[in-house]
Image (cartoon, rainbow, N blue to C red):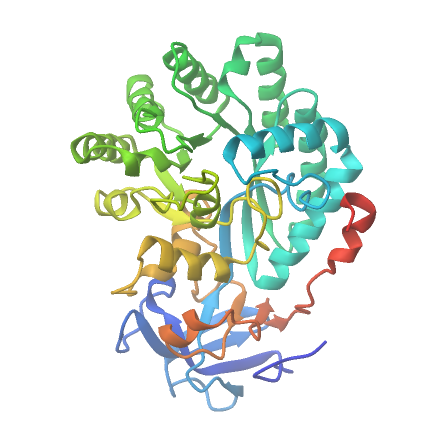
Length: 437
């Protein structure tokens, strides 16, 4: 194992001194804050954060690692991923990079290849990457048309138990809502989701059955105590307004569970007044919105021989200003929906800042991959730095935003319960026997 800009601590009790932390991720400390960054000492004892003190105020008798103003972040929360699709690109590429090309390619690969062994190998590879990058919480959507729902949820349950000390995992059933018309399938799907402690999800589309579909979904979720996480309006079609319909359905049904909507791309294509009314409804309904900046830029507004005219992402600033809980996430990795990616929240954060203009100021932007996504999925104990919590931290040599955002931070150090982990990434060659080279 090699270390980059610091040597690992070799003591049960030690101090990370002169640590620059995103203030939004840290319990309040009476220190100056500049551009959302504060300098503190983090006291660690037996794998737990014992205290957060002003720089220079930590106990003098503890071992000390001087970070020289290097950043310390909590481990990350990545709450919209597709672990079951990951890394199939080598055997099933998207022929033209379009959304329909992605749908067709994934369908063909799933029907031909997604055995339990295949899904497990690829999911574990993805988790090893995420863990090495510093992630401690992941929510994944699982393709759930029969018979895949039983295969993938069974694999997920096994992997969740095996990884519980490293990454907390949640799973959402992903299926077209028109499949609910098959009552036997939908009943079986709900049974599987309940048995594995998952969430109901799905893909919403405009159509004459949309109201029935949403009412059925929310009534079923309420009956079984399930939260809901949906793929919404992933299109540049201005007429796609299922986000509005979802908000209306939540209010109409008095649904009290958590509701999350991913993508919501068409919202940015609509007239200002139309979009504003939907944003107001979303806030009233308490729906959280997840932007997927890398995947949406890749797929949206892609037409052969034509330069894209928009960035593909939702109205992130307007939603946040209205009080809507918002976050960003990885989405797909090396599959037909997104040919690239490695489940690295630092990459997601850097690209989100650029694509969504989350800078100027950057004061609270760190929340979008830490505290905000953790709270959205009901794990406010994750994505934060607080006394009494496990010392699950990511250390960077970068001291200020310009340094952090200008390089990929490949020399970061990850601590789990105060111990440095091996950050060696899995070799893609390990997947050659599964997906080819």
